[in-house]
Amino acid sequence: MKEKLTKKYGLFTAICLVVGTVIGSGIFFKAQVILQKTNGNVSLGILAWIIGGAIMLTSILTFSCMAQKYEKVNGVVDYAEATVGKTYAYFIGWFLATTYYPTLTSVLAWLSARYTLVFITSVVPDFPLLIPAAEGGCIVGPECMALMMFYLCCSYGLNALSPRLAGRLQTTTTVIKLIPLGLMAVVGVIVGLANGTLASNFTAAPLNTGASNGGLSGNPLFAAVCATAFAYEGWIIATSINAELKDSKKNLPRALIIGGIIIIGVYIAYYLGVSGGAPVADLVDKNKGAMVAFTNVFGNVLGNILNLFIAISCMGAMNGLMLGCTRGMYAMASRGEGFAPKIFTQVDKETNMPNNSSVAGLFFSAIWGLYFYLSNLAETWKGAFVFDPSEIPIISLYALYIPIFIMWMVKNKDESALRRCILPSLAICSALFMIFASIIGHGMANVWYFIVFTVIMAIGAIPVIRGKIKGAAKK
Image 1 (tube, rainbow, N blue to C red):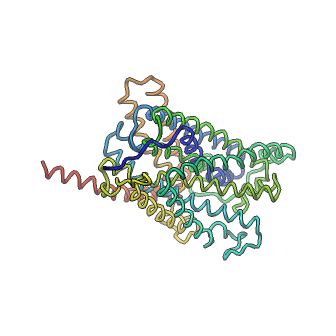
Image 2: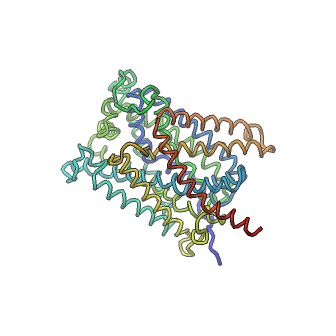
């Protein structure tokens, strides 16, 4: 008897998946990047967070309408199939499995390793690194890369061998990661108002952060909004457990909306707290960033403990992304599509996990992790085909949403005007804004990414073409 995925997750776990996957490294990593992109302009950074949050929320609201109507194995792929068609849904699934999930998972594995080393070196300043921490050893050192691979394999093993334990880890790390965010949001603002740091940062003169790239220096807001894409992304991964969620037609929309609202509020509050914890000049320094704000506000001991919580929160986000990674190939194979569907539809009867699909997810994550290190971290690979895999693939997914939103409006004439026209129209405008912001913010990197994207999609087209040839031959 063929094993199938069972209903094993409740509403609270789904909310924790949304919040826990989105809130992780992005807020800690990109808060500094946004200050760099805006040349230290705190007000412009807040505006970028608001715009990014509004874009996320409009997409969430539109997909929540779809979630009430469609329920199968992988939410977003199901929505694409129901609205645009089976072939388009296959390519969405192929993109998610080979590019979207693996790129973000590999970046999260690196960030988990980075913040672990930040914690260790802050507690033990003399901790031996081949590249000293002050020279970027916590970012590009061999210890960081080894730890990155270790975390990647551990996350894969946990999700492949014990999905229930992975779900509990997601719930636990979600609670843990809200501790440093909540404390910094409240205490940072109070301390910043008391000592004048917050007011000073709002009125500080622009800094020369050297963040110029293409049209970026002249359009800091667009560049900053692009940076929020990584921090806000991840909510769509919750749709990958649609078939494993109890009463999913009600619970998935609830989880998406409640989780989205929590995320926006937490991000803006934390950003204000960090701005009250240290001068902007320290916050934009790549070797300091938010860590110096924590130690300034809470002291060395408590500040370092909170740094450990940050590392754990990054691991939680990585775990959520790996959850989507392990189910990527299964989502296509369950429809009889893609490469070797008989292999990737196999579900282990003991763990109730698609283990072959999980192996493929780890393989793609390893490939993108290597690319990220060579092109973005160590900068061994320069020039052609260099792009930021933590931002541009996310924005390309927004582009792929547009046909889904359009066909939702065309096909669902029985829906109310709000659900059928207003929400998807806002979501389309939001997606177009993200695309425009990426063009302005990333310049030539968009071209290199588009070439790589086209090659990956062409490889994915092979089983589609083979299927059509076999179908024609039978006729």
